[in-house]
Image (cartoon, rainbow, N blue to C red):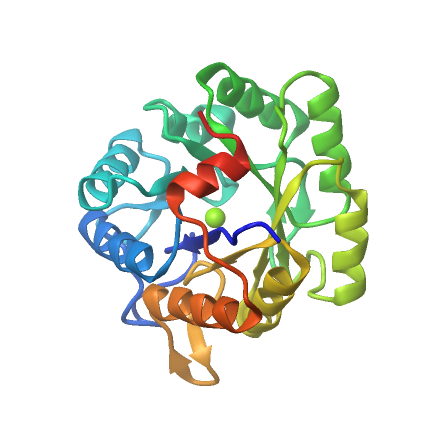
Length: 270
Ligand code: MG
């Protein structure tokens, strides 16, 4: 089996320090957490940007500060910038994190519902983001919240907007979108174009189960406070604690962990 790529999704758009004191918000806090996760076995960090008062933003200067501070602490680490829509729906906003040419960025290929809102990813916005990524040689992590998003990714590939190997991240167990369920996972894997790599991200209490499925089935694993703020029922997690747990479980399964350079090789990064 290929080596395991562990991604740490450090913060996301939703968690607050009131919910969990370990949630990193400032660029310095994010860089500290990135370093701790790297030491624990993560080769990729997925980041969102927040203003100093915690609001979501696509501010290019804040993204660049986060990126540069992480690279100063852990130069080898792969930084994956979010182009997610909770901080602004339109292309102009969502592309700001791509201006300074990060190695990777997330790309959600279609729309779905969340529990109390619509997650809008209009076809023209998705296409413009994919175009910018291919022009700048930024590797997309294709965020899959529902089955149809794989079909949308295949269409982008047909248009020449995605390169192989395509890298899919299944986000499972988020209310409003797809369930965290083994039958659903099997369906998603079966739909993938040959030669694709996949990663699994479980939301909330699903994270421990999806972690084991990813390790056992030859996928890759994302954990972190973006998706899950608890280590176990009522016990707040830190990002490093969650990565350390994946590393321990992988060892039990006999699955070796990829270094950032090994992750670059698996994902076809420049
Ligand atoms: Mg995200």
